[in-house]
Image (cartoon, rainbow, N blue to C red; front, top):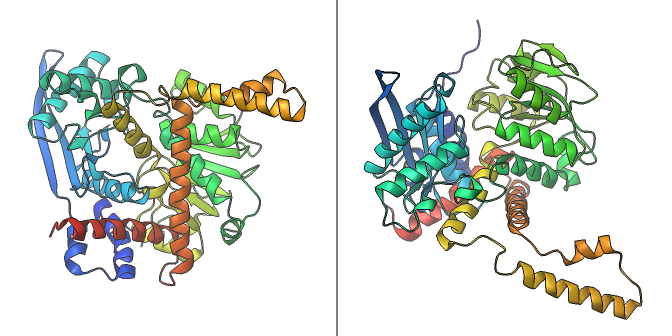
Length: 472
């Protein structure tokens, strides 16, 4: 008889968080408060498309408001449902706590296949959905701030911000009602690639700890490590591009919706990305072998597996066949709770989604701050830093009696601009969170895996916040 999953997505998240409750010996009241969403909005609204009325269904769930605003993406997908939205909202609460971003957790979704509509139709639908969210109090700079997710991007965020502005023309902070906007419309440099960049920083930090690497059955650094990546969307593309180009890891397999391509010598991610843009498929890519059975590729030999697509990709049906030594969950919920237990027993090292893909919300936080302060990062101090650095160079030359080359001079006197500051802040955030997770894993005998350590870190912070401000 085939094995089947018995838990929904939200139940799976709660099941895994339950391990943290037991470690902390959390009282039942606080545990119950953390298990449930504070509020869930469902809206149905009509839009005239090609002369016919279509009715769309959307949701916005708020898991916790222990910090404001509540933060979380909006996804446009034909399979969206309320359980998924509630699960993702809970993950956002834990995610923000893990990386010390002072937000509550929220998530939204619209049941739609964007491929079936043109640009003007998508704008009309997005603006109408925004109207529903604003009217019901589920979107504002101070209480609930969306961001891009699957099926949405900078374009949709710009439409949302503009719609909010027209509904609240008196709000000078209107740009902060949403993050992930285009740079010229209040966005921040580095946000588009932030989640993928965060995955890279997580793996870089993991490989800075030889003991952790050894426990995962590997040694050395990322150089030439074999990686299989599932999903070459925004997160998967940037994560694999940075890991291969900057850390010299070897991407041997890329899994997409229509199958996978494999080359044990490595795949050029930029070339494959351009091929997908032009052909809308990985089939026929000339520099790798194609196979239509994408799920099978998850079971291939590799050092690191990065699921960066949908939830529930590794289940009780295939968990015992996974050969990767290390799994970095770039997607939300790619491993079910039951599969997670199988992998832990096998000794597979799993870096969990609530930590690994937190780069997006971290840089969203930076964008939100930028919008509230009404000034780009680096504007006040960049030239001052350059002048100060020039003085240091002159002093160094005077003391040593040696002239510094022009190339070195340019590097040394460079003052940090916005992208430098964003990357520095993101790198520091991901490093610090890993070190806190690692400390718990090494010092608490009740914790045996990174996921439990991550949730213990998050739940402890949230529970203390609940107690401090008297939420119950």
